[in-house]
Image 1 (tube, rainbow, N blue to C red):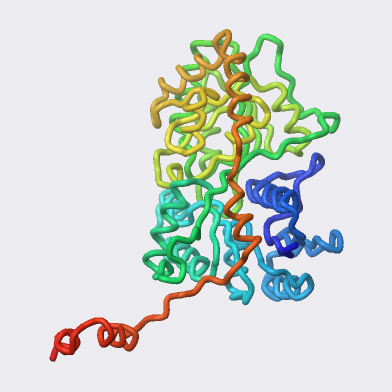
Image 2 (image 1 turned 60 degrees about the horizontal axis):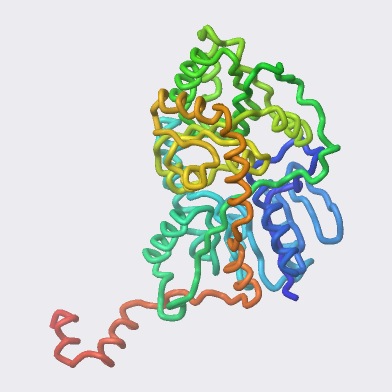
Length: 418
């Protein structure tokens, strides 16, 4: 049994947690799958405070001493390999240059996220720093996980440009796609009231999570305006809010638009809720909505809110662009609409709320859920046989040696300019 140190984000979410971020969900997802596969997994999780949870789980604060704490965790658990789940964890582990095999989970494509942040901040100042972080991780990682096929292909391109694709790894799988999935609450008795009770005649449109740099608030607002004008039963309920550290003010701008709307009383903002309160929101929702800008982050990234909606049997209305949105359209798990098209959004809402769609959705969801998920197979195969990746060792003398072995002396002189 291989021993694995999983570095990620914590604490692991449960029904009473006050947060369940995309990073915590991703970490918990990896932990569940690795344990299910029979590995001996220890946890070192980035959190708000240092705390030993158990013999095999510790929380560490991401402060000036975080790297020394990570080193101690590696020495304490003596793993056969280390998996860093999410970009921050992967960056920290890469700084340590571990001697054991290192798996980096890139939960999002950093160059695209950096571009979206630059667009929101109206500044390219941080792009170079983020690209350097991506390169640092790729230069140290021996195996890489991505959230979409598109990101996996982009990552192979990055590895090629860094010279990582070489003779020693020809034909080997170096990058795998592990799409995000929801964490379901197994105990429905843990549900707590969220502070909002939908009237029996209303239809709830639900938004969950953050207003990130790739949210299209213009289309979201205009589409909801059209839909509310057509259907007086509609209410929009939002949980979540802003993201720490981002430059955008999208949520504030969205609320400013609503303040001047004749339908402003039909917009409800609940803020960040505990996980057991979210269960109450999910129970009341008639559809979940997602509205993205048509940008690289959308094309390459994941959408946890869509996974959460589907995990709680809520049909989805989403803009096109992301891989999971294409899945929604292909399996008819809701309706996808054209990016930046408010009328198309409103029409999608109307279609999902039409009589009979809910039964069709549940039948389609059952087919989708029963489809065999093999996302983790390639990762598990690597964990069973972990190896350090041979890096490119080349230079002028290596090239000269190759020419001497494979070319005529005349060719060598020509290459030397003689």
